[in-house]
Length: 347
Ligand code: TTP
Ligand code: MG
Image 1 (cartoon, helix red, strand yellow):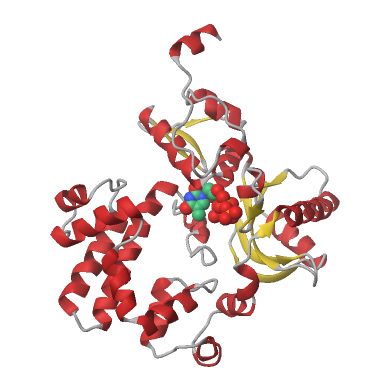
Image 2 (cartoon, rainbow, N blue to C red; image 1 turned 90 degrees about the vertical axis):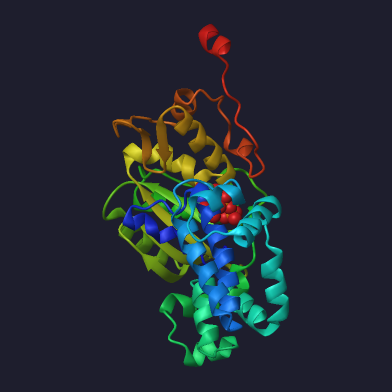
């Protein structure tokens, strides 16, 4: 679920859990693991194991799964029924077997929905809490071994599920701009994500700041002093996750502050601007040209050499794609406008 976003901090470990494509396999694996957990709860150990093992292998599978048959041929433990589930998931986005199990185990389903809606509690943790006997948020609050971030997630749960209207995002942008300008007039920063794409509302605030090292602490301190940071959820050397609130007349929202080194600025900006679908398409295009694109840079796959890019326009040009403004990088994009060879030579 959106509010948990367990992948975000993994930047610190140098992994790419936010890469759109790997998340399709991960989503599928999560669904299968969830089926496994229902079978486990029903005492159907054989099926539970089959689904859990398949889920683990699918999460590690290096390519995006395109069909049940592909999975059956390449992944041990994927038999006829899991293969059919995969096809159904790829076609419709959900799996009937899971919906039936949820229907049959309604109390478990409802509780998992409630728990996994809290920041910092994903389905796996929700399952664990359910198995330990917790059923309500009061149970969690008073009896479960919650992390400080999960407690904050419970306190702000009503706020965090709401989207942020663009008008409020503009105010947040202005306020952050004032504070950061006072801190350092030369600081380069931008609110990326859906806000930069011009969307009417945003799920969170994705603040990118160019720089290295101590500046993150200084930024957090400055925002904190101004009174708009109401809670800290997690902090690494280049990423901060917290909750921001303009004041009592406003809701509280998730903010991520991401420090991006200068040499990664263009690719970082592109990545965190999204949309997720645009990222999938442009990374695929890069791969077709023997290149690897991620938030850290553009690289030649064979030599691992980093190709220097200063702006997003550079990336589009190198990949032979017509420039798309952030507003054009919509979540329902289905293909990228490739520059034809004749256009290239006429330029
Ligand atoms: P999000 O904040 O999750 O997405 P968003 O800003 O586009 O939408 P929302 O209004 O709901 O916040 O992530 C910011 C960008 O990071 C997203 O647009 C693209 C990139 N990203 C991926 O490429 N893959 C992912 O799995 C996620 C979570 C993000
Ligand atoms: Mg966002």
